[in-house]
Length: 290
Ligand code: NAD
Image (cartoon, rainbow, N blue to C red; front, side, top):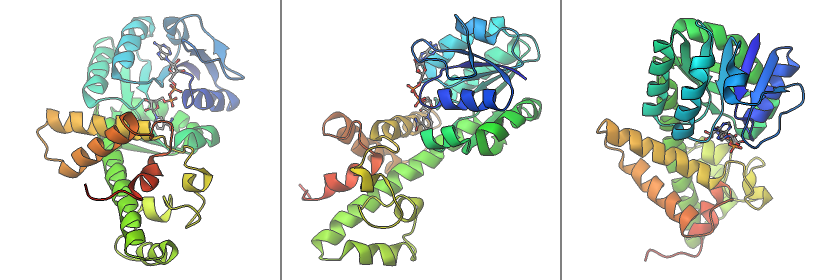
C-alpha cells in the first residue's frame, strides 16, 4: 500500500518504520524528527499525502492536527483514508473527520495505548472511531503496527475510549500511590501490602503490572528511578482532555478532576516533569495532610 506518514516523533517514527519493514511504500514528513530507515522523506505534509491510499498522522495535539489536516486533505485522492493516531480532543477528531468526509475521503480517529515500547515492537492497541469501510481499509496496517484494534464506533469514539481509559488509569495510579504512602505511615510492609492488594479487590493494572513501589511486583519504572515509561506530563495531557470532554457533555467526573489537579501540580509546580507518572509515590511519602 502507498502510505503517507506525518509526525515521525517518538511514536510515529517506529510505527512508520514497521510499515516500511512490512513492505509498504511509506512517504514521511516531520517538521523536525528524522525519517526512519525505509521511509522516503517528503518535503511537505501535502507531499507525503499525495497519491497515498492511507495517510497516518501522529502529532502532539488537536490544534496541530487541524492545521496539518487542512493542508493534507486537499492533496489526497478521493477514496483515500485519513487515519489520525494522535491523542487529541474529541472535538478536533470529529472536526477533522467532517472535513475529510466532505472531501470524499474516509476518516478514522485511532489513538493508541502501548507507548514507545509498543510502537517499536508493533504491539500497540488501537481504539478506533469512524466508518466500517475506512476501518476495513486500514485494518491490515493496524495489524502491522499493533496487536489489537477495537472499532469503538463513529468518529470520535476512539478518542472517547482513550480518554476514559486514561482517566481511570490516572485516578487509579494516584490512589495506589497514596495507599502505599499511607501503608508506610501505618507501619505496613510494602511487599506485604502488594501481596494482599494484588490478589484482593483493590487490584488494578497500576498495582499488579506497573507497581509504583520500587523492588516490588514486576519490573516497572519505579525500579529505574522513575524514568518514563509514561511521563507524568503525558498523563496530565490525557487527564485534561478527559476534563475538557466531560465539560463539553456536562458529565460529572470528580475523581478525574482531582487526578487532573494532582498531576497538574506535580508536573507544573513540583518536580514531576520528565518523571514517570508513578513517581507520585515518592511525592506522597513524607507529606502530611496539610
Ligand atoms: P513527539 O513529540 O515525539 O512526536 C510528535 C512529532 O510531530 C514531532 O516529531 C514533531 O516534530 C512533529 N510535528 C509537530 N508539528 C508538526 C507539523 N505541523 N507537521 C509535521 N510534523 C509535526 O510525540 P509522541 O510521543 O510521538 O506522541 C505523538 C502522539 O501520540 C501524541 O498525541 C501523544 O499524546 C500520543 N501518545 C504518546 C505516547 C507515548 O508514550 N509517547 C503513548 C500513547 C499516545
